[in-house]
Length: 309
Image 1 (cartoon, rainbow, N blue to C red):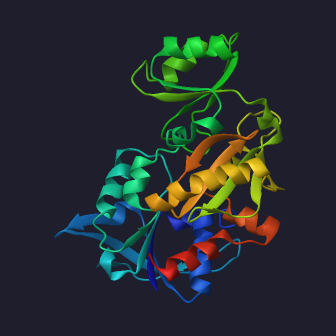
Image 2 (cartoon, helix red, strand yellow):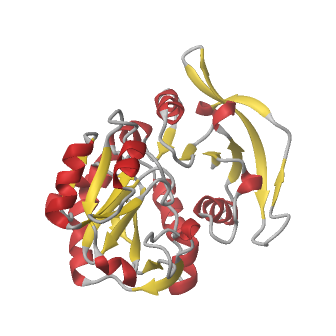
């Protein structure tokens, strides 16, 4: 197949941890022709989405891990498949890119309309029995009341990634007013508040699902001793973790909806058996899970894409 991948600049990724890089490696190994482009190289004219794309060859080494060919402007309909792998934040440019990709004239994975609908913090609300107590609000007074009710909470922006902008709050925090003003933009931005889950000290589990089926094996991200965030970019350490029976039940409940929406490659986050996020934009974890368990989620993704819609 001929495949185009919309991603962040490839020169800036960390190949040992990057799931998009793993997808390129797997595609190349299966004989597919890969091209890459970035958000600023996406356009829409004459009723078609176009990309200024470059052919790419990748190698699984620490340095000099890619080679790019000459750039060319091509309609995305020239490709058998387009992977949407742009990292958040899910800002207006990101959402507009998803709208443009709806005019690709070919299969886009994950489905761009579904990405727009499935906010990674709000989408889990469809599976409420698995959630910790939560509040979505932009009102600092409501957030203060939620904190009084639960004693310890976490507040997070709705469109960021990698632990950016997340705060742990408790009733005695003298910075409480300033933090709530900052994260809500003085009441102008909605945020997600969740009851703090002390099980985070044991780790935040990333489970990958391909076409609604859970990969057998997960990555547990254990926060650094001086942090509460289970994000690798925030200093958490990745360790191997099996899926519990409850987590398998959770995946079985979520999977059919992911499949229905065209969300082929998804990462869910679970802390202490509670679902906290459903990541549909550019979820990571494939490289670590492959190293831990020998199961390559990206191979399963290509098997599904090769099988067709």
